[in-house]
Structures are given as structure tokens and as C-alpha cells.
Amino acid sequence: MLCLLLLATGCSNFQQLLKSNDVSKKYKAALEYYEQEEYYRASQLLDQVTDLMAGTEEAEKAQFFRAKAHFLQGNYILSDTYFRNFYTTYPRSPYAEEAMFLQAQSLYEQSPSYEEDQKPTITAIEAYEEFLVRYPTSERAERANKVLEELYTKLDRKDFNQARLYYKLRYWRSAAVALDVFLQEHASSPFAEEAAFLRLDAQYRFAQESVPDKQEERYDVALDYFQAFVDTYPESRYKREAERVFDGVQTALAAIRKTKQPNS
Image 1: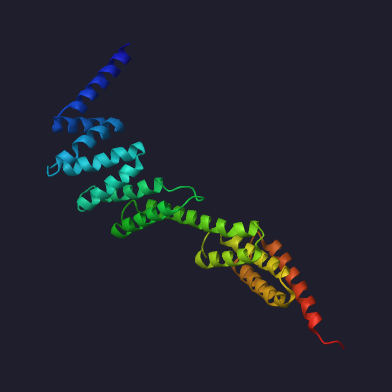
Image 2: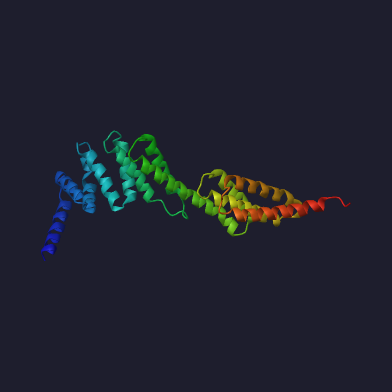
């Protein structure tokens, strides 16, 4: 009963605060709620008073804590906007560095799974890179770099899966081209090794299914892909399969070149 009474009293006091016209009282209560980790109540009050405090000594602090209260609730669309507005308005604020980092973090939290459109991911990458340019020695720089690596890997994975889809569908020519483009653009990707093997195998299968007049040159491309693969990944987990493809290419080329020899 006592707990229910305290809860009811707290709710009643909060509702009275929301209806109050006393900006100072609301702001003081908002900071108290924030310190108590009651971020919903803090943000509700700060949403009401922050704009009314423009031009006052506390305006900067109010704007920052409104953004952070929303961030800590997971309201990332709002915190993105509020943090961006904050460090644009107060670039020399002692809170500016944290605000810029948390704005990037707000975008990171909105980044979807790799199967979906990656525009939010690209926007998050740009925000973290801007943060590192402005604060290269920040204690948050290590975290920013780790998140950037994660986001770039997500983009790599999306591009790789799109290229690999052609392989799965047995569109060998399209697969070889798409995987080649992927390797040119993502040479250091964690998916590059698999892409290099699939490019080799796709080119081999493409050559097999080609018209006779085109087979030799397409098998030669497969040989180039094999050499590039073993040079780059001499201890690859795909090494045995790559060697099997190489043997198939060699056998096919030997047969083609034998038919070209003049009869003795």
C-alpha cells in the first residue's frame, strides 16, 4: 500500500509539473529526474522548457541533456536531431565532443541489417569520420574506429552477397564480373578470400558453357584468376578446391589446343 501511495504521489507531482508554467521549476525537476535515471520524465519536461530557455545561461545544458535523455531511452531519431543542433549551435561547448559522438552513435543505432538499404549506414559512417577529423585525439576515437570497421564490414557484406547471388543462381558470367568488381573495390574485405575463389570457379564454369570459339580465352582468364588467388591466399581454406578447378582448366585447354594442331 505504501509503495502504491508513493507511486501515485510521484505520478501526481509529475503531472502537476507538466501543467505548470514555472520554467525554472520544471528545469530543476528535469535534472533531478535525469540524475535518478528517470529519462522519460526528464525528457518530457526538457521538451517543454528547452526552447523557452533560449538565451539564458542554462540553455546550453538544457539542450544537451534533452538530447541525451532521448538517446538513453532509445529515441535515436530525436537524439540524432537534437545532438546535431546542439554541436552546431555550441561548437565550443564542453559538451560538444560528446554530443558529436552521440549523434554519430544515434545514426549507428538506426543502421539496418545488411540485407536492407544501407543509406543510414553510410550516413553513420560519414558522421563518425567527421567526428574523427574534428577530434582525432579523443578518448572516444578508438570506439569510433571500431564502429567504422563494423559499418564498413556491413557494406562489404551487402555487396558481397549481391555478387554471390549470381553465383548461387548459376549465372556464371554475371557472377564472375560482379565478383571481380567486388574484389577491385573491396580488396581488404573479410569476404575477399571467398570472393576470389568464387570468381575463379564462376569463370571456369562460364568457360565450360561457352561456345567453342570463346572457350580458350575464357579458360585463360580462369588461369589468371587462379594465379591471383594462390598468390594472395597461399594457405587458403579453398586451396584444394581451387587446385581442382585449375586441373579442370588445364585439361580443357590441353584438349582445345590439341584439336588445333594440324594432322600429321
